[in-house]
Amino acid sequence: MHLSASIILLLAIATLSHGQANPEKHAAGMKRISFLKGTWGGTAYKKLKDGTFEKTQTIASNDPDSTKTSTFRPIFKGNYYSVSGKVSFNFSMTIGYDQWRDKYVLVSFEDGPGLVDIYQGNFEANGDLVLSNFEAGTHYVQGGVKYYNRMVFATISDKGFTWYIDGS
Figure (cartoon, rainbow, N blue to C red):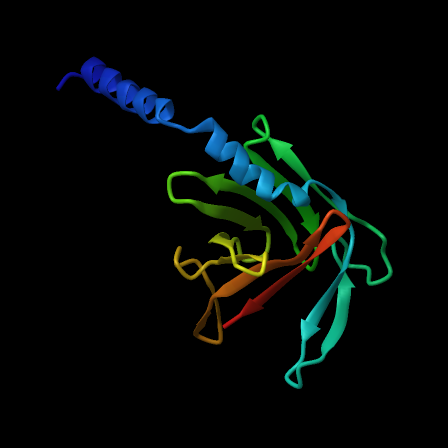
């Protein structure tokens, strides 16, 4: 096959797959996560072995007394939301709705060890959005052990949400 024929074939496939998109389904999926839009501040806590929580730092800052915030912004005509900030490292995350698999996908980048982390999941019956990096197989290694994370957006309302990450 000639190069020009290959390029035309790839363009045709890309056009067909884009043409099969369902804009209404995608818009409905994105509307479910519209609670993320806006500027948020909060405190990071670490869960202790006894089940209690210890304050570690304010989100978006290394200073525990900071009032710095993070902002989830719509990008690419509102097809995704993106946020960047700083905890003990700089991070950037983008989340969107995959209408073909009926899943939410979040991709996270950070400047620590350079992990590209992919979380996937959906809303549960209780209304929480639960994402995990297990299916994607992204994880970090500590002491020779693979750790997978679960990210949960809970108690969602128009006034905010609780966002926590746990590992196993």
